[in-house]
Length: 315
Image 1 (tube, rainbow, N blue to C red):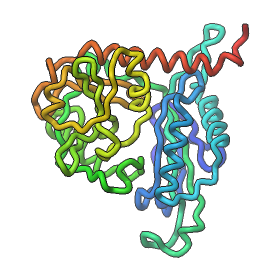
Image 2 (cartoon, rainbow, N blue to C red):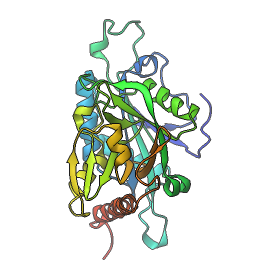
Image 3 (cartoon, rainbow, N blue to C red):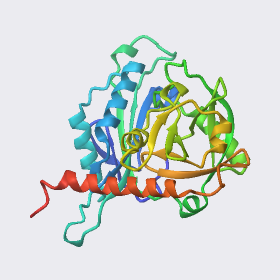
C-alpha cells in the first residue's frame, strides 16, 4: 500500500493504533477478497460521534445479517474512536479559543482472514471479525454543489426490495461504483437507483427526499434503501421544521414535479438535487426549504456536540 496523502498518521486496527502508512490487512482477509463485511460512516464534532447509538445499532444488525463475529463491544468502539480522534488532533472542544474538532469517521468490519478458498470454506464460523477505524478532517460539501445543486441520472442498475441485503451497508460496493461511473460518463454528479418496479430508491451514497408544498416525502424502507441516520432525523424533526413527513413510494415523474428535492447523508449532510436525466426538478435550482433544512441540521449537530460535553466543560 502507498502512504496516505491526506495528512492522516494513524488508523485503529483490531485493538490499537497503527501507522496509517501500513502495511495493514492480511491479503486473505475476506473483506478484501470478497467484500465480505460492513461499514459505517459518521460525523464527529468536538470528539462526539453524532448519532453514535444509531450507527452502532445498524452495524450490529448488519453483523447479524451476515453472521459476522464482532467481538468488540460498543464501549470499546467508542474508546477506539476517541483514541484515534485524539491522535489525529480532531477532538478539539473549542475551549480556550482552541479549534473545534470536526471529523468524518469510518468503521469497517470484515469477516476476517481465512487461508482457504471458497465462499464458506471450513473454519469460517470460527473467524473473529477484523475491525478497522479511520478518520479524516471533515470537508464540507463543495460550495458549487450547494449553490447549483446535484444533477443526477437514473442508473441502469435496479434495486430489488426483496433482497435480504437491501438495507445492509455491506462493503460490496461494486454496484454503487458502476452507478457512479455511469454518472461520470454522462457528465452528471450522481446516480439514482430505481427499484425493479421503476420506483425511486436512493442515490449512490445518500437517501432521497422531495418537498411538495409542506410535505417532506422520502421512499419507504421497502424501496430497497438504507435507513440513513440523517433520514431518520429529518422524519423525526419535520414537524418542528414546519413540514409534514411522509414515507411514500415515488415515481420519477413525481420527483421531477416536486417543488424541491435533496439528498441526505451522515457526512455530506443535506445537498440539493436539481435535475434527473437532464430534466429539471421543480425550478431546477436549490430551494429555500433545502437550504433551511441543511442549516437546521448543521445547527443541531453543533448543539448536540456541545450538550454532550457540558458535564466536562467548566462553569
